Amino acid sequence: MGSVRDFREDDRPAAREVYLESRRRTFTWLNVDGYRLEDFDKDTADERLWVYENDGEVSGFISVYLPANFIHHLYILPQHAGKGFGAALLHNALACIGRPARLKCLSRNGQALAFYAAMGWVSEEIGNSQDGSYHLMAHFG
Image (cartoon, rainbow, N blue to C red; front, side, top):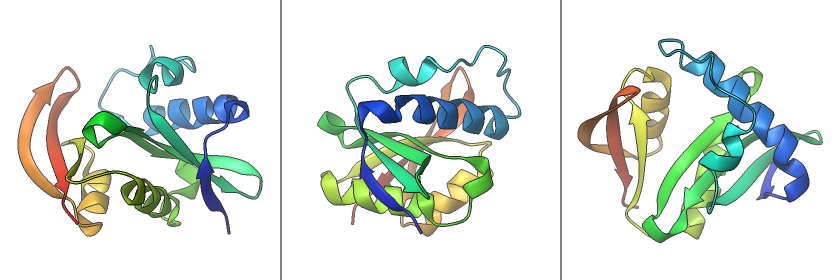
């Protein structure tokens, strides 16, 4: 079994791969042809990051924009989905940030919406973005 730890700079190549592969496999309704490894760098700039390391491999990560207690990204390699890695990352992040914590989840990502609901998150509102409608979710506990 693995564990959550702080992101280190030498995790960057693996975290880039997690981000790219997960988004390509998850967002099947979007045009993902333009997704690149370097997206990780700009999309997580100025955020606090943790990784889930399993058997010496970075299998997932979470990033938080601390000033707003906003969970910006939570991604797990598809082959490790459903093993509790995402829950471990989420619990770790929630232990380190204030409340209410918030995140956005695309409405078409039913698996993620079910995951967050099971973890105690509630939908506060529905909005729209260039990628489609999303739920703004909050955690108060």
